[in-house]
Image (tube, rainbow, N blue to C red):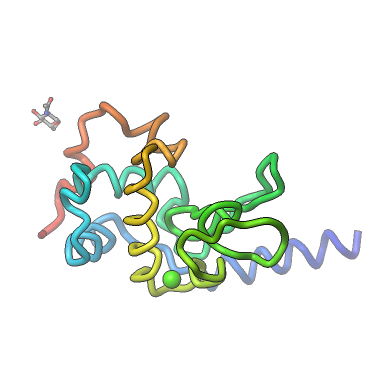
Length: 147
Ligand SMILES: *[C@@H]1O[C@H](CO)[C@@H](O)[C@H](O)[C@H]1NC(C)=O
Ligand SMILES: [Ca+2]
């Protein structure tokens, strides 16, 4: 019970400190970092993916996956393949500690996402993109934004 209270308190603090981007703020940062058209994907693909992966929360940490790995940050980057959380095997393809993907500076997250999409799975590496974004009309993800 004490642990539960502490856990809830921690979540409360974590939620308060989280940086949650707005759709247009994220769109503008992604565009500035060359994501519009990167490997053939539109800005809307990335924004839609980030929405369904993290709700635009740059400090999101996912629950453990079936292999014990976790997903980090606005793009929910996986610790088995792309970053090191020092809690198990990792290929660490982006050569970063996973904590690099839970701060408010998403520049390194973007560099890693670009590395991920260059792999043969392309954007299907992100299950949320496959399930919610692929093949949909993406115009709403950039509508109303001055880009
Ligand atoms: C996508 O949705 C927008 C806004 O609803 C619409 O104007 C546009 O024609 C749609 N594009 C396609 C390819 O269906
Ligand atoms: Ca970062």
